[in-house]
Length: 170
Image 1 (cartoon, one colour):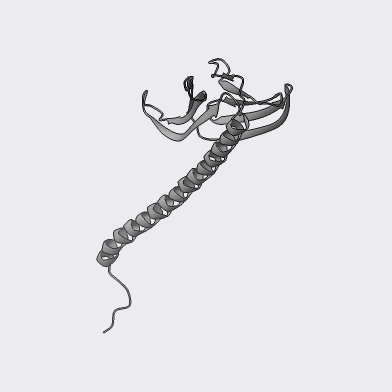
Image 2 (cartoon, one colour):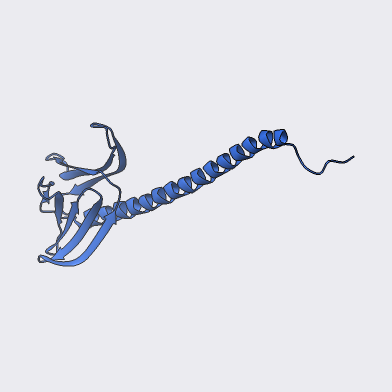
């Protein structure tokens, strides 16, 4: 005689195995979506960093006769490049973005915002290099760090821009 159903003992053995497979499948799907989201965020950040690096380099190269570079003011978190044609470029940053403002005679003509990441730290370094025999240059470095929450000294370098600016026309 052929049996049509299954016993309670067979169901009790198979049901936990099916539940475990479902949990594993759901966890795999969740991790896949989370990884895709993190990859998308990282890709967006890298595009913004690339655009920022290109723009900073263009601004510094345009500023061949830089009169002053004001280091970041602790209250305003900014630095300014003075260009040759009575225009200037200001870079300001807060906790999660950098804003570039190009001005002609103190009137803003272009504003770009570079949304980056939370816990942004910017380190601006500037020093004069050169001697009497060589053309004097100003060495400028802009370093962007991402501070790791919960750790006082842990931070990761995200972008490093180092530029030499001639202080006299070439």
